[in-house]
Length: 213
Ligand SMILES: C[S@@+](CC[C@H](N)C(=O)[O-])C[C@H]1O[C@@H](n2cnc3c(N)ncnc32)[C@H](O)[C@@H]1O
Image 1 (cartoon, helix red, strand yellow):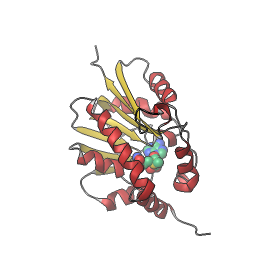
Image 2 (spheres, rainbow, N blue to C red):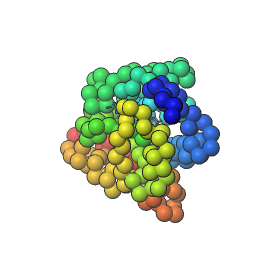
Image 3 (cartoon, rainbow, N blue to C red):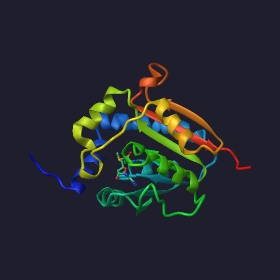
Image 4 (cartoon, rainbow, N blue to C red):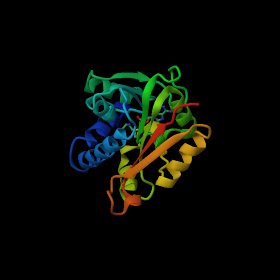
């Protein structure tokens, strides 16, 4: 069996988005994220935490946002940097973000909370550096597709063998637990559209902060 190094895995990960089911899934995810982005009001700057190869960071930049991507993995970031210069990338840990309070309008996690060892701490950190809100996208625990994506080996590179999937309810609960003293408005949707809503393969959640008193 072929043994791939981390950067080869990262290129394979990026390639999954470029055709077939990966391309179609990503198109549905982007349409969903775009709807939720509109609910967050005027935002100009965004940090994508766990940006991986930068696929969604580039997409956020293409939406007109000034985008920065942060990831723990040097291999993923090497691919992100090779893919384009419109975005700034840096290596860092979601649980200790190297930014001052309220540096960005928005902090996004796209298919990343599932892989972070302490998602609660990561959400608190995100809420610290975000002025207006958070944009979350996760693979649905109740979706067979999510399971297949996992098993297919896309997420088997050494740094993230473990994944924890969420339901809509789990995700909302996590946000409330992480931010007990923050006032916010939530909006969510899945890629399934109006039929079988709770089973859509990808869940999007926007967390719009209310003004601090
Ligand atoms: C499945 S990938 C998602 C990448 C990208 N957001 C996307 O949707 O294509 C999850 C990413 O989270 C990153 N990650 C995991 N734990 C992290 C942490 N504590 N801090 C920063 N990034 C982390 C991994 O390195 C990996 O690139």
